[in-house]
Amino acid sequence: MSLYGPVIPPTAARPDREPLTSTTEPVSARFQILSLCGGGYRGLYTARVLELMERHFERPIAECFDLIAGTSVGGILAIGLVSGRSAAQLREALQDAGPRVFGRNGLLQRIGGACRTLIASKHDGRRLREMIQTLLDASLTLADAQRALVVPAVNLTTGRTEIFKTPHAQPAHALGGLALLDVAVATAAAPVFFAPARVLSGEYVDGGMVANAPDAIALHEAEHALGQPTRDVFMLSVGTTFPPAGATVPKRTGGGLAFWLREHRLLELSLSAQQSLAQGLCKERLGERLLTVNWAQSHRQTRHLAMDVADAEATRTLLSLADASYAQTAMDGRLHQFMAHRGLDLAALRTRMGLH
Image (cartoon, rainbow, N blue to C red):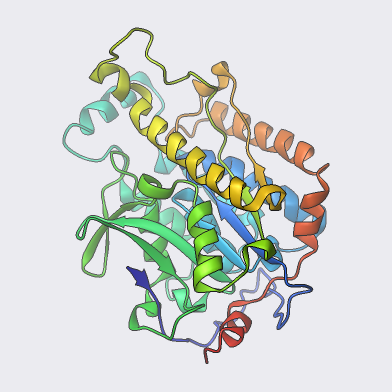
């Protein structure tokens, strides 16, 4: 089920950020997608990579794309970008709030968290919502987004995947008035870590259950909802780092429940496997028009980079890996082409689709 909404006049620009450039026509037929993966606190890596891009090219990254997709923490970042926030603001918010959202430092806290998950979620979802509230005006809705947006989540009430969308390709629908804040909380409500999020009459959990990398969903949206020829679609996909090969392989045949639950290995493997599948399918479709930014953790780093670890060591490591990733990506001429593009804003895209 997709959510669409009425066209609502754009809200006033925030004093701390200039509004995104309104563009009625792109510089070419090129249609660009920014796709942001999930990964809990590891989204700090993603935010830092985007921050370095904005700093280097001296422009808001959202201006460079026609469609932005995000899952889980990537969904939070995507929603922040289409709301006019800079990547630096998003990185700062995640870095500052991470220890509160994922508070777990000493041995007693870790034991307490493990016991808590037997009967309830590991972390308090209210703190996640509070972090998102520092980034978003609670009155902003899907129809207020400055760029087209797609954000997946799983509706527990119906048992189906649900894609929250801006009204970029369909006539206005009442649910387009859905708050961006609620969408962000829904896509980031990871099972075990947070309780399901209630949105309207449904209960939602993390979109990473079905699309930790929203690449394939975004490509499908561009091709089928927006009618873009595949040859014109270009995608920049940013991950959250990934464990080295074999990190989740049992040390003995028939690894049991204790092995798979430890350090969330089963969840990590599921997310990693379906993310690689989605990105592999997109690579076959797009070829060199897909630029992926990600980094393989070392075995030592993996021990410090669980999805819900937000301590000083994890922060230093993620920022360092992001800096290394960007230094490598900056040498790829495709990045310069991505950042030179002028994407369509939501209003212009609706006009192109014949919607008023």
